[in-house]
Every structure is written in structure tokens, then in C-alpha cells.
Length: 212
Image (cartoon, rainbow, N blue to C red; front, top):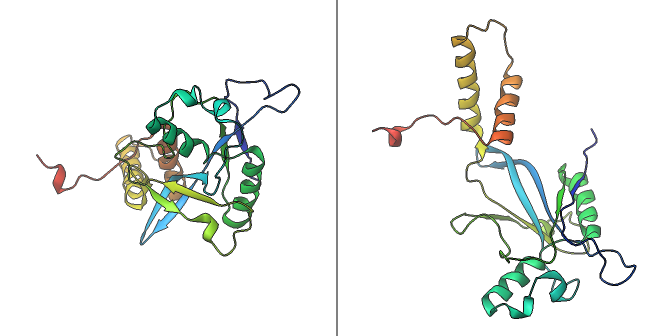
């Protein structure tokens, strides 16, 4: 089955850096997939891909970060760490081909609005978020000419116990509604996953820690 490659346009600047040149475009790239850890499977995990080894910006800093040279040292550092990790269009396409062939993952690429107005640093998710890392470029089958790693968080992810709880909830709901038509396990799982993906909602069994 063919997987589509999405590019989401969203930049403020439509003009090139100089007359007639292609406009400067950078992307944040990610994939949505499953992850196996010990005996649990996590679903709809977002793997955020970033360029690890870029040491020089792809354009002058003032084109990439608004008022870059007016920022204090702390914000300049955050801006550099953020911008150097974004991917060019060519890099996104190379990464796309690699991930499809070797890992069966689709790449979704969101265009970064340039120049950046408020540097956020290299990792998005909040100061309290615990990130895990995928050392993609260290794998034996890695073939790209630049190094890419990924980071992800399992906080709030749908996993095996919550998927089971969600299916059980649907079964009970259908029984209470006196729906006589049988619904297969795969259909129930599909509904649970779709609701989680679209609404961020999932079912968790009540444990002892939830007691009053």
C-alpha cells in the first residue's frame, strides 16, 4: 500500500533570499508509529526527527531568526539549537525514502515560519516532559549522508492496557445500548485508536490510587 508524503505549508515569507532565487524553506519532520517496549506496545507515538550534525546555518542568522543579534545570549543559544536541527526540503525527501524503505514509516513535514519570532529551543513538549531518543543514524542500515536522530515521549500515549480497556468499554457500551450486531475485535481497536488520534481521549481502568 502506498503511503503519502505530506508537506504542510505555513511560512510567513514567500519571497526568496535575493531576486529570482528559490525561497528559503525549512521543515520540522515527524512520523506517527507504534513502539514496542518490553511487553507493551505503544500506539500513535510521535517520533520527531532532527538533523544532528549541522554546524552552520543554511542562511544568515538574520534571515532565520527575527532580530537575532538583538537577542540575549540565552535566547541566541536556544535559537541556534532550534534552527540547526530543522531539515531542508531535500533532506526531508531523503529521510522520507529511507524511513519508508527500512521502517515503513511515513514522514509528515511542517514548514517552519521564517524568520522565527520566539525561539523555543530544540525540543518541544514542555519543561517537565520526559523525552526518549532514537539514534537513527547509528543503525547499521543507515545510508543518508547526514545524521538524523529522533525524540519522543510516551506520556499519555495509547498502549496495550488502555487499548484493552477501551475495547472493553465499547463492548459494555454496546451491550447497555442493546446493540445486537456483533462487532469484531479489530473494528473495536480501530475505533479506540481513531478516537485517541482525533480527540486525544482514551479509557484507563481505575486503580487503587484512584480510590477516595
